[in-house]
Length: 368
Image (cartoon, rainbow, N blue to C red; front, side, top):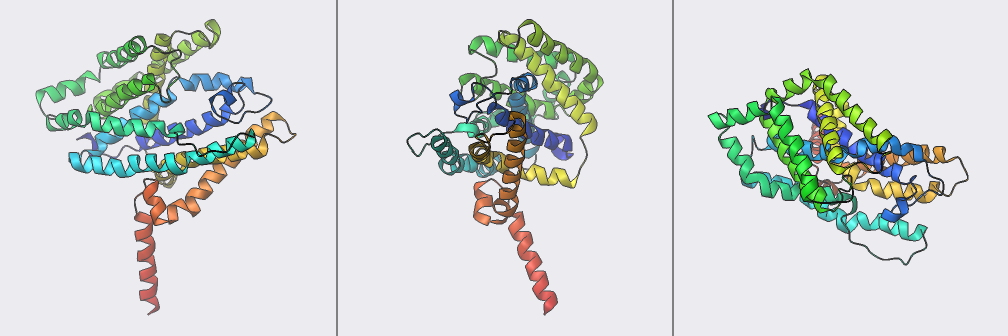
């Protein structure tokens, strides 16, 4: 299948999508409604942050599901159905369950201490909800994916590929997103976490992500050609939402259309500028999910320590970003990455342990 060629831009986009989730969560601390969704809230908000975050908010989660579906398309090239489910269980389901029992309760405890609440052990999907969704999507869509793998070189397979290389393919995705907003009625398009809207929107994005990689170069050459049109239309749609609807009352179908244009814009520019290998990418690609799984602990701990300080609010925001990032990377680099059992619970391969052991054997052999 199309997974025979490594697509580094897809790896970059997965890292970027997860990085945007971290920044978005930090921004919530400085919004006047943060405490109502379980975050420690700054007494003085930074309302101006919400303008760029609102632009990101309609496509950051759909992008993640698109990229996750693309990853499955690459994965099934070398795997049968059982191997795919086993591999996704180890890399997604196990970290999801581990996180619910051992990661999420920690940041809930920090919140309870900060607001002087009764201390309790809370089991919740919290920020890990999308991992559970992805695993369900793999189970539900695997029969279709392996059918497509089987017919890839057939007349039907080639027609599907070519569909996503012309405007009809884009229109199909856009229309599906719009129809979903009418069928699954929800207050706001951006309410993804643990909602039926988030589940079905994610399912569509996951499916189309697979199909966009299945289409090989048909889709990617098309968005590359139209990339400037895509970014202009996406910007105009956001401008309408910002200035006409004031980011409040924009209809969900309009947000769905804007979401598609932003996602396709990101794909186009990523394909143009990010499809190259680097050591930084190799490191971040492996560490992205473990860092995301633990980031709420450091975000809440940082909020606990930094928010009460008598310093300018913007400085609190900067310090909280620095604290969260350093804490996550330190835990990943010095503990998660180096402890075999933790590598298992965070969905990492055992490459570090095997390499480390091999190096020790080489040293011992040379010394002897």
